[in-house]
Image 1 (cartoon, rainbow, N blue to C red):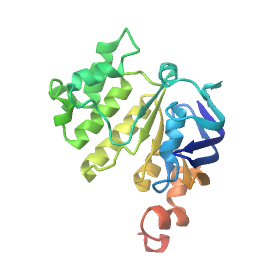
Image 2 (cartoon, one colour):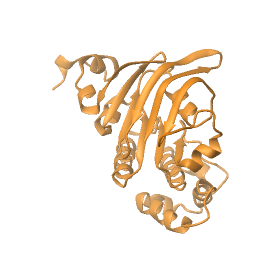
Image 3 (cartoon, one colour):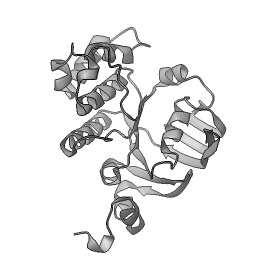
Amino acid sequence: MLKINDLYVNYGGISAVKGISIHVPEKSIVTLIGANGAGKSTTLKAIAGLVKARSGEILFQGENILGKDTIDIVAKGITMIPEGRKVFVNLSVLENLKVGAYLRNEGIEEDIKRVYELFPILKERAWQLAGTLSGGEQQMLAVGRALMAKPKLIMMDEPSLGLAPLIVNAIFDIIKEINKQGTTILLIEQNANKALKVADYGYVLETGNITMEGKGIDLLKNEKIIEAYLGTSKKSMP
């Protein structure tokens, strides 16, 4: 579905992404893991057209979308959930969901019902201002708003950031459910353990370069990944 070939991106005067190549098959979950400043968010922003790539290719369903406007990229079926959720705090939950469907004219009510089925708490809070929701509820709303665009590919930037462990578990359950329903997911996560457990495939990004890749379950067992990103050594794991 998505192929990135030899992508270079400068961000803030710095060479943030240095010739990476990534493949995201249809209906899969692919994750990018790495430390802060590795170039993960810049990669997603380049795909979404929010930052300009210096060179390379971003192929979505065979079409090179590099250089296209964000609104055109969304119309083709790519949505992004930004780091920090960024809901419209002065709009209600329902209004936020409707904003997610701004490029659509049909089937909106049906998809609102689908979001409410995934997140019953949002139905209860439908007329509540988004800014008064808890962090976990705002993350659910951000995911729901992205779904309202009927995307083929959802990109998620740190969906577990700042959330309590129980809420993190719920968010990852929802990620698996959305994927099970047929939506492809490209996931950025500092919680490497959670990300690799749900991912079909993963890439390790370090200072703008891909240093390792493989099936999620294989990376989860890799000693270098364990020591660098899981906070322990393979020998100490049960």
